[in-house]
Image 1: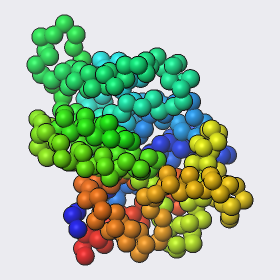
Image 2 (image 1 turned 90 degrees about the vertical axis):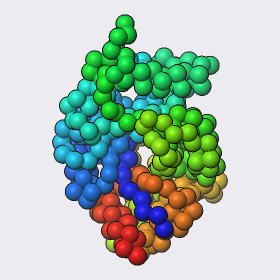
Image 3 (image 1 turned 120 degrees about the horizontal axis):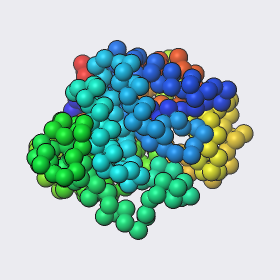
Image 4 (image 1 turned 30 degrees about the vertical axis):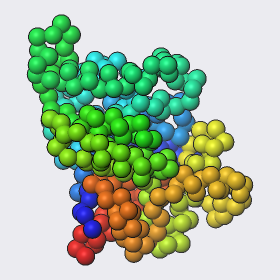
Length: 334
């Protein structure tokens, strides 16, 4: 089995009974914890108009996390690029890279990260997104290049800095783009697992080497909930299940504590929908996590696994990431 790195996706989850200030402190605590566990990177994702997710000002939050850590890479998973001017993002991430040299990642997506009405408020034009997104990536590469120093429009800070770009996707569209541009590719298997296998196949088969990358680099994001016992892991995973029920019901309220029986909450149709969306979610004790990681890696042969963990109790969330690290270490020795 090929060795793979592990990393963190943090959506800055807001929990019932907690403040957004609490959320940010928990995110910093998680970043420090996973840094000590030698996770590779800590990514934050842009979302808008959701009571349950507080990472809307993603660049600001990246700065907060990077300032409170020392070695772990920190970045976006991702910035929804069509929501922004390419120049502004180049300047913002140029500033971050100048403050925290060699530690900043710029992951890029094309989705709005919100609902249609909020997407309009962000100034998006859905008619041109498929043309705008690739053009903006090329603009970023230009702004970051040393060769842009003679241009009339320059990114200061940003110009001449080595800020790695990553393409994010939840369908096959971005797989083609990541392959064409020769950039690392991260798939959102934590909420859209249906096309992950096909997306990786397209990316690998059509990859063209670039100045940043000479061969495909495949990253998969999944939900992970680990605990000392299988029973505890399945109990605390009900927070994740409730979050997906809320998405189905268009209810963006903060994350709820675990429940004893999900059948009191979801209908049979909702249950089927949630379990399909959580197809590759890894839930269990360490032995079960090891077996599921092994099966997942044998199927997808990834370079990096990014773990998103919706666990209500912060200390149990920290412990979950410990168990995942222990499981990966155990597999590496096998």
